Length: 317
Image 1 (cartoon, rainbow, N blue to C red):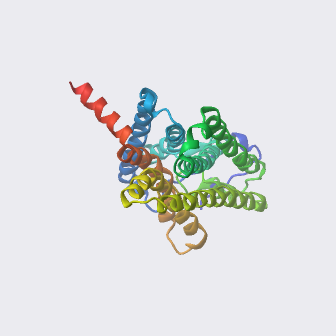
Image 2: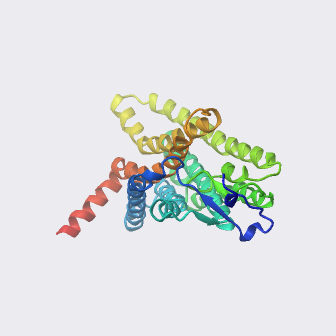
Image 3: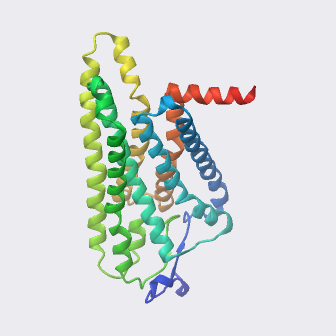
């Protein structure tokens, strides 16, 4: 590595990092940007459409759709936190990022990822109450209760992820300012420090276990009870119809957690996997859910689908 890439961050607040994009695939950056840009465009349009339809349609003003709006906002912030800078790297070779901007990007990525996971738990709780205790759904999930659940999800993400940038800001960076990634991934950043970063490493591992582990546990427990209630229904049609109300949520959960799990396993055990594949998968797991979630809910939720079709045909007449 050239000497120009070796710096001493004695005044790191005024220093910059260099994001390489996808190392080894620099010649294909422009071509790689096409699917990423397409995914981002679909994510922005789809999530804004979901927000617009839910706002305009009074019949959609219910707990599950309020959580869906939270999910849409989270997806918009999450995808926007990485895509503009990534496209600047791919299109204009603009690789520099200010140290503070890098930590801000890092915080937004992990904060809103934690929020998204929490929203899926809230949605699972909504499905549990709606299916297992249908007569109590309207009195259990009132608007104030939904607001409190939403606030707790937001505060959990803000508080748990706040130590990430605070700890990273304390380390002494005296090796290199080059990040072999297309965004400021937490471990990729703190590994550049020339001090002991075990606190950051252990804390991020603990947060991952606490957020993903507990959230998956609560979702699993909710669906265990849901499946028990469904299988106790007298007819096959009733079972299928009831289970169908969970279809969108289950698809969204799989879209979020499977790539996250695969990326984590690859990061820890895939030492022989090429670096560019690691980075491509890391980008996909952040961009795929924001793109697919509005498509899943738009296609599988009849009220949203019908309202969207009505808006299209009404404008065309």
